[in-house]
Length: 458
Length: 123
Image 1: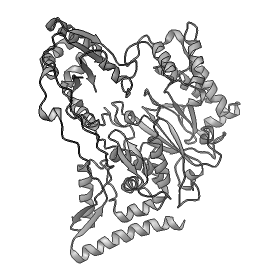
Image 2 (image 1 turned 180 degrees about the vertical axis):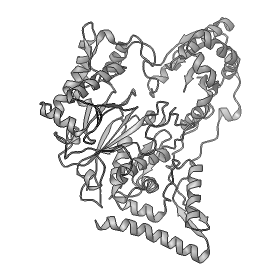
Image 3 (image 1 turned 60 degrees about the horizontal axis):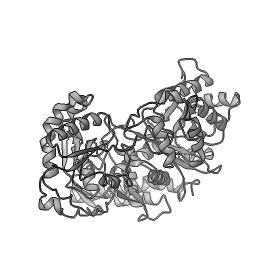
Image 4 (image 1 turned 45 degrees about the vertical axis):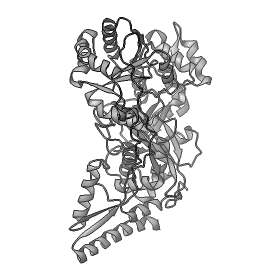
């Protein structure tokens, strides 16, 4: 079917890249001037001059006979990414600097210095797992690069990770590669979403992950390099690059290491987070989720707070933020230990707190938006469509259908378990809310296995 | 714990060997591995042949749901009607809140709506 595709100048490279990835590099694409279109699109009147300017070009694209290359383009060839590279310098420092320069020029690094991934160091990294270096974990979006254990090991070396961290990195990648995880949106969207990486269970302590004061900050090699290894793996295996096919407008908020931290199971009054996700006590797991800008609650060291007050603030934040997309929404709530203990003293279990949040955040039917922020139709239409196509699980569907009427109260998530409550932070501390405003699921927890260099995660 | 100790030793040996090699040859060569994933190339397809004028054609305008796309496509539809009075314009938006979602089952339905399509505005 002949067609014409409109994008904007800032997204032309992205459009061409995506067209090539899908095997149709010759799609005729018209790039509207970004500096004019994004203001003018607010009204039909304002956008009319742009339509007028591009009309004839569009007609031409729809009617002009094809060139030979458009009709039968050359087959895209597989780029071999397997050969090692030799870099020579006048001394080690010079050679290392040249490696760093070459990797950044090739879009293989993140802008900070990397450890040159020599075969010896990669082999040492691979020794951290029982998996074969050639084992394939999956294809990484958006370009579907093949994620082998060896390739992830190369990126882990570059990140400065220790071999004993490697099984944690591998299962993090396994989570991202789950078919239900919305990786394309997370890694490429204008929303600049940032993965949240939670290490839970006894391996977190054995590897010295920080779960206390400064858990999202610098100074802990495990937090910093596991997150960076995942970032570099996604960058290189999915082959993304800013302004080409990673179009995050501000860039990720935690660009280099993601939000990587561990749960403080010792100070938590409840069972470990991963047990609430269905794993066994004693299991070590990695959860990969995604988030926009996290919200901060509580008083820290400078203001009074109460645990119930923190929960009520979180409820109000969720109720006020919209949109109501219960099929995909997940909320990660990180409570600092004092807050969790106070809640437990008031009788809350993790499960009863999840149920409280589920009930309190329900949105009155009358407050559903008449127009969704993306696409046509109302939020009610969208929720009904989500029930019809199964994105809202059949066992939860009736709750939504029963409440889509005056006086009804619509849950903002599919079930109470979609409030993922984790205990971490200092004493004093703050409490965090991570929310991913995508339209698809981006939350997976995977058990650590195959470790060879640690007692845990075997 | 033994293996933890081996890690810095291995790294030091690599560095030392490179240093020694550098001393002997006055240069150091680092062999490094490519961090990129290999991409299985997709089967490359050509685009559809064009059939000349738009007169009498059924033109499908696909609103991808991004803010402002409807204003752009509404203006485009009116201009198409002015210039090609025998053409039929079909507005066929992507389903609600599916802007960023791959829709393998929905895209084939576009073909049933008309002869040509215009998609916008992608970002």
